[in-house]
Image (cartoon, rainbow, N blue to C red; front, side, top):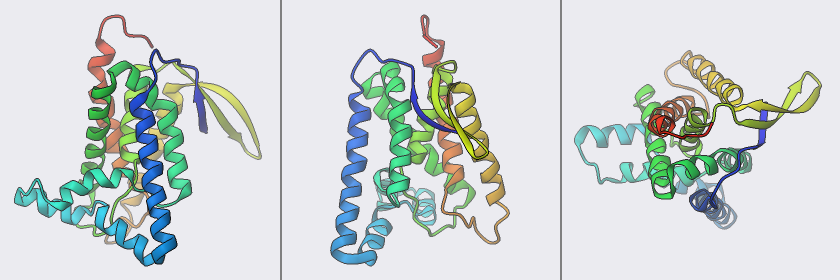
Length: 232
């Protein structure tokens, strides 16, 4: 099931959402430049420098050095991506779901929410594998928080989705609670499955970042859901 768009209009232009999209594409352009000019080694060096390394972050938090580079990397890592598929998949979800959440929360609150969701996502993955030395990158965790918020705020919104039925597919308007609930269940199943890997979580996907971000986003969005006159 691949969501393509929602039937949930906004009242205002989603300035922050558009800025986040632009920032991710701009940073990816830098990645492509590094790859073209310095080769794969240069790109790996960039990711190592600005990606979040759970082991380094755990050491920084434990020692109380909150202004250190590993803590800074929590924010820079949200704008790095591992390839076109990673980038475009994330940006599709961001474009579909973030504009309505921004519209409900307001621009400044949404920006704070998005960054907080990214922090919660990094915390979720780091708690599961605190000794990992592999850098984490991508907007997936912050976007997962946005999905959690959307589920709480607009559970009955219709999401036009590409649904695969064996060798066939069909465009179907599916309620957000089904689309996002299905997505979250997949993250939990895959995340629990990844725990069976020996010595470390041997996967390129940080499932517990998705889970942590989604849960945090849903919880933070509850007060906005409970406000009088809230639309579904």
